[in-house]
Image 1 (cartoon, rainbow, N blue to C red):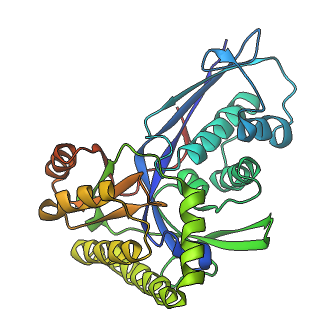
Image 2 (image 1 turned 90 degrees about the vertical axis):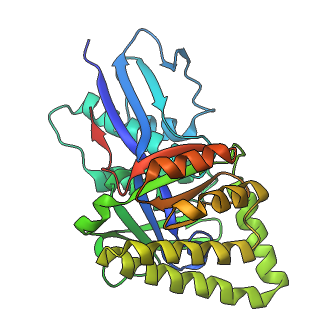
Length: 325
């Protein structure tokens, strides 16, 4: 019996969270940790040893039924995740990409996988699981790997890969998905992610920011500031200027704090790594979840996170995208 195996990385957002909801760019990088999926034929449908319940896993059902229109023998699906769950690291998107790649390998073993096709497929699967709302940030970063910029328009200094559209309850949304070609200087940089241990409630945090902007219109200038910081951070990334990337991360965190999306546990971790990192900020929706630090000495930063009560995860900067094993 032949087993198909695939791996898709998680992601962390370097700049632009929350502002991306309002059409500004967001910069995300693929990380070393991710989700591994194995698929083989079986006498019954199972997921991680339990009977497969399509209602509980709508994105997997979408990929099986609507993308692949799979009508072959029952499958045994095993999932092994190295990501903190509900922490803003794109675990759901990585699962969709890994399932898609493994299914492709199982049904069309002689055809190479198409990362852009997978990114599009996984984006629709995520939207199906999230009541029609999903940005392509997580799925594109996991599929393509490296450093990805998602925006309402093409961003100068990036390489355009594809455009994504989605019909949401609020109307038609469009995104431009681009890649930043990282210089060799970035090879000496490490990302150290610190998990607070608290789940990050994305929907709640996004809704909270929307309400705050309504109540305090002057906060709109903080969104514009995040967009400016994101563009400055991109320029620094393209030049391989690690110090400037770190400064942009620090500045972005200050603006996110003003928007009210940080938390005491996130602040404790960001403060703890300060003396050892080039820059640090919350990553993702906030309110819990993770922070990320840029470091030349990742072990020292990881130790500082542990001492402050967090769980560290060390990654290269911009890992490779989805691939077969």
